[in-house]
Image 1 (cartoon, helix red, strand yellow):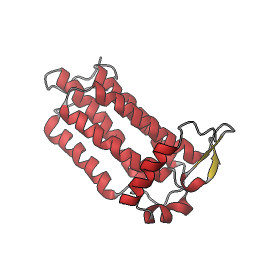
Image 2 (cartoon, rainbow, N blue to C red):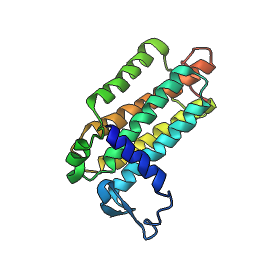
Image 3 (cartoon, one colour):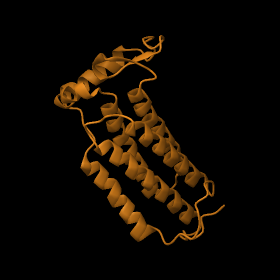
Length: 197
């Protein structure tokens, strides 16, 4: 693990972000496999990258430590998803052997536990459709939710050995919806019953 971290640190210090290797419309997956930037795998990890950015906006918008903490944990886990998605299926064994983490059922279970906590302990009831835009934070979380659904659709188009990636994104979109409603309830003094604008 230490050698891998040192290799990553050294690479970051030595390589410019502007490699110019993508100027012709191709990019590299892990281990140097070249693919078109229109490749379905590139679209999938790119969508997860957009999701991570959307969650970042929601996190810096939040003044609630519970929401901020959950989003930060998810952002770190999405890096795991992106690394795995950026690796061709035939290179996954090498990826794991080199010490890189893959998406696990435990990661999905953690999201499920947070969802259970929100539904049982932090939210009351819903009486209407949720219309995005009641608060800035809730709106940011709804943008993250829809971005997550788009990432999920992109990943669903791939043939993956690890089904936990799709399960994770499916669970995460649910979590984003609940966090948005929780953010609205906080703005209303804890009442989640009315979610229309």
